[in-house]
Length: 373
Figure 1 (cartoon, rainbow, N blue to C red):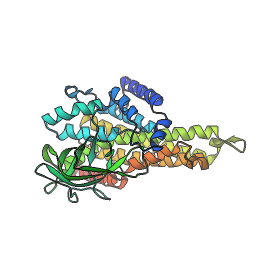
Figure 2: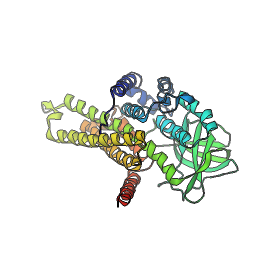
Figure 3: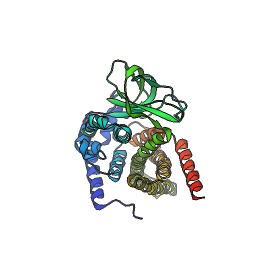
């Protein structure tokens, strides 16, 4: 089975990489870190003009009607650039939730704006530390009103709408679509390790909401939505890992000590080789993940969990070893190593921790073994 991208898809990668090299240099990310901004609005508008926010949205709703292979390519390049924009929240989560569970009227109302980038969406799931489950959700939606607090919410300070996960009946979750411009919505910035991707605590006090589709969905169906988001997220993490490796290699060739490039020392070679091995494993699993997503395979949970675990491990390891390769300079504010470390740490907890996805992986393996028996 060939998981490699087609010639047209590789051309998209080349185009995306060239665009981001020009429009999203490290100075763009640094400018967000050095300010009170939650994202780079100019870059977001340019990305929307490129049509990336419309990638998987059907043409009837103003989208491009492309597939998840194309989305994976864009995600990887955004990871390489450490782009300070709300792409994952709006595209992987809010857009996918509306396409999966929304009514025809809701799709007609919101998808065109999400496709054009005029509307920024997010998913409000977490309420406390630890993994969210159907049993520990406390935010309620009754009679079209939502009350409670969600924190942290990725890109919550800048999102226009949120798909809010509310307490449903046993084994279910109720999804409510909330316009965050209402006066009953109070948003407070949550400080994280990566301020270039802002997070918020969102307080809802009898805030008007509309049920997404039929309102309640099975928890397994909701987790399938997270599986779908985990695949492009893994590709984004892979982009971080590969760029950290590339940066470490470049520095190891240019930095001299004791009359020779530090890349010639065995200790540095081992670091770079270890990064390469983990990145290669993560890429292999990421290919499998996007194939399962694009083909609608029943093995999506297994493929997404494997891709997510491998990409998390690779991105964290590469970001850490990149700093170590740079030595004492790597820890300073002036060097760009911090961008990959910050983003790798932040994404390692998005959609659930590595341990959560390991549990998902084990559950999928057990399920497949039971079916085979």
